[in-house]
Length: 143
Image 1 (tube, rainbow, N blue to C red):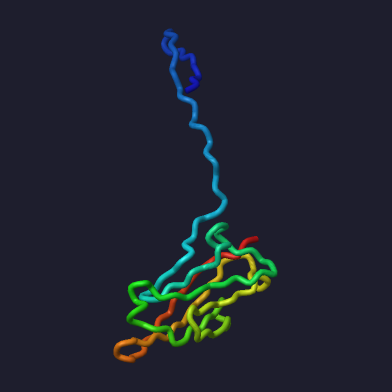
Image 2: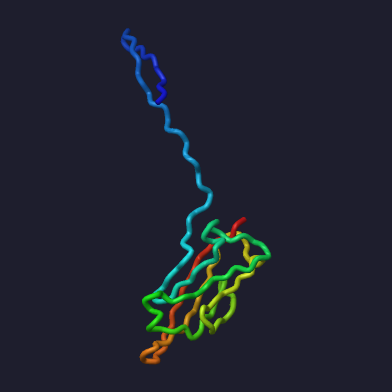
């Protein structure tokens, strides 16, 4: 630890004061860690690998897949009948087969915040009653 010495002259006395140097600068992270899996009730939406590694999705010709899955504890009780996906309140597709997947074109992603909303229709395997759940997932487009 380096010390800077200051000479003090006060009332005719001379002394020294030890001042500690500032701590070394740490590395600044530019990407913000975002959750890649968002759950609401029994349903979860998992983002693509690029979202997990970079924290945002780049604008490119790549198609990104967002998969809808049931929680492991709910798979024996419920079944996904239909999943409707919207991206920024515009329709992004309907999937009726498991696993339900929303395919988002990278060329449509502008820099900034986006909202992928999965509107899920579930049916109980035991009673046959259907229920409804919405799973919102916010993510960011890279600049």
